[in-house]
Image (cartoon, rainbow, N blue to C red; front, side, top):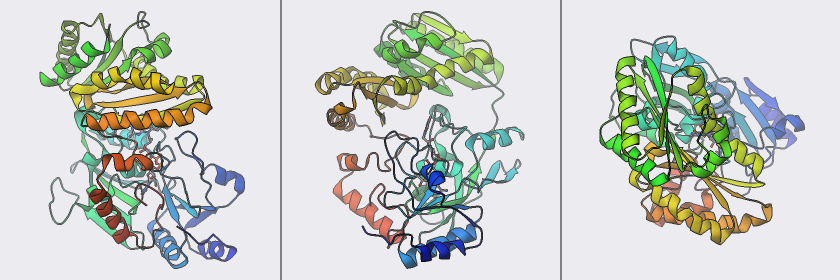
Length: 460
Ligand SMILES: Cc1cc2nc3c(=O)[nH]c(=O)nc-3n(C[C@H](O)[C@H](O)[C@H](O)COP(=O)(O)OP(=O)(O)OC[C@H]3O[C@@H](n4cnc5c(N)ncnc54)[C@H](O)[C@@H]3O)c2cc1C
């Protein structure tokens, strides 16, 4: 694909659009050349910050006229390179379009602009006794617009579902500059195709999300946390299935494998995790008395299933420390290894242990070390695939490809949260049929015939 560079003339025309703030200082522009994905770097020619809709419309119309690419960006924490401008052009930052427009307690909805920080929305909803559940681990650094564009998830998904389940409606500027409203402000609505669901998870390739109407629920009164240590991974995963099959409703059901425990076990607020085969981190939220019974019952399931220890977090400080351990895995892996590839595969619930058990085969063949942790209750496993030297990259790439194929044979999918962006594009034909790719490319062309919005991502 070839695009027009941002010439002085185009830059001047962009500068005349009221309401756009231009960033063209080369040093500041560097900040927009990367996101949360290691080793990806694509420099924009120009960055524009928008705080309202009209300038976004004008920018996209100009982009079509002159044929330069525009790449939407929230807060740049993505893990698939989705906000990086692979063909240069303009990065459109929505970071400052960050107002919470309304919280309507009686309707249990929030109306927000895309740049609102996930955590800010949670806190604002809480003031009204309401709860916005989607909780990516990056919630204090990522935007609701970015969450919508990637359909972000997190530990709470096991009980509450993903971002998609909370978006009732959207406003988005289409690549041709037209503004559309999709969905509803109500709890139900079946008029027309579900455009909201199409835009959610489309990774900024079909429209720039400028407003979101979000469903809120009552804030749980309390939360309680437990950790269970198991000598091996298999019984831990059996316990996960049993917990869910018995009708318990954990608000988080996370696991760490033995390698992660070796790496971060010292951070736990108790002794004895090192040398353990697996750890489950389980939470329940709701009425205090009910969740106390619930967490104890889930603890019983773990003990029946062979857990060597079940430890409750009796206070907020210890709860935080348990979660810090889970969050520290990626940081420590990153510090230790010069090569670190993240994958976030999903397998059917009952097959996590089977997948983890087959990984040593790939480790041996490709000279890599794999750390496994993640959302056991969703079958969503984060794999930190590492090697001691950057020269191992081609072998690691081969190993990743083989693991993804295995995941697909098991009935899984190659990404549960992070999306395709540019990081997984080359693997897409492993999962999607040529007909599905053809149809999805046709949808992209219908929205964006000149391929000016976030080109080079997912299908383009
Ligand atoms: C430490 C860390 C932990 C993470 N944990 C999780 C996790 O638990 N779960 C999870 O799902 N993700 C996680 N992520 C990934 C990332 O935080 C999410 O993908 C998040 O949703 C991205 O939001 P953002 O505002 O940073 O978007 P960006 O990175 O800026 O953009 C992401 C994508 O969305 C598009 N986009 C952004 N805003 C808009 C808009 N307004 N309109 C249209 N398109 C737009 C971009 O073009 C790009 O394709 C993590 C990342 C880090 C660094």
